[in-house]
Image (cartoon, rainbow, N blue to C red; front, top):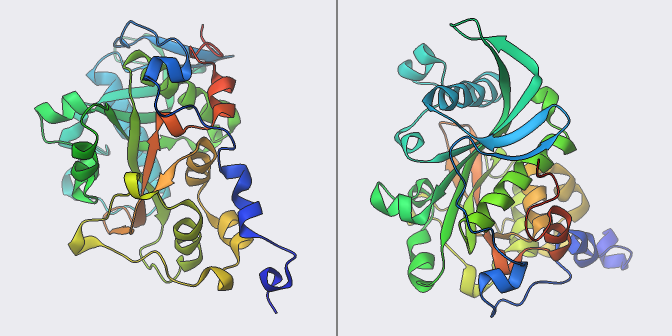
Length: 315
């Protein structure tokens, strides 16, 4: 007899800590929901926070973007199972056309410095996130996520809301700790406030391309974190992978939750929803799920932690 059938374990209780107990009022304007928004947009190279030797800021120039691309290559291709084409192998950079017009959030370590070609010491980049605002996406090729999910239907249904895509998240292995992740999220929160963002979205990855091997993780997300109807987005039809791979009563929720990648669990803690259907990304060797985070739905505990004005780690 399963633990759930004995009544000793409830998946609802298990995910309670990942589910916002209190949400801001979704009917209020953005600034009223989360406190006074900072009025000045984030600038290139601007420092957004600091903890000790670690600083979170925007990339200053294309040289720094290239360094972020090298970090992504080291994590995605060297450490994980992404498959590089000839150009990627030659450059040892994870790059695509979106990089040219995205904003790049960086965590740099001032205690880890290398000399550049001019002999100047420069802090090394140890973490990065790629950010794309809707108005910028509209001027170019749209959102990267649109290749996997029908996000345009959600955007069209919310014409008064400002969307922002998060992607290409990675952190150098020795820096995968609370401090680095908190700085990245502090930077994202500052960016959200500065640009009056209403909805964050993007794909998060589970390692592996066999959905049956990660059936528990997919089923857990389907049963416990699927977006409500008004926020639900479906994977594009020719790439759709069913996430409801086992009944809720047969699912070992505790085990499935433990197996989820830290990034996905972090999104759930913030109050994220999961889209309908997964997508196999053979190039990166992953199974992707869609993350949808309306600012109005964010867990107020985390909003208060970072500060309604993003002041917690401001320098």
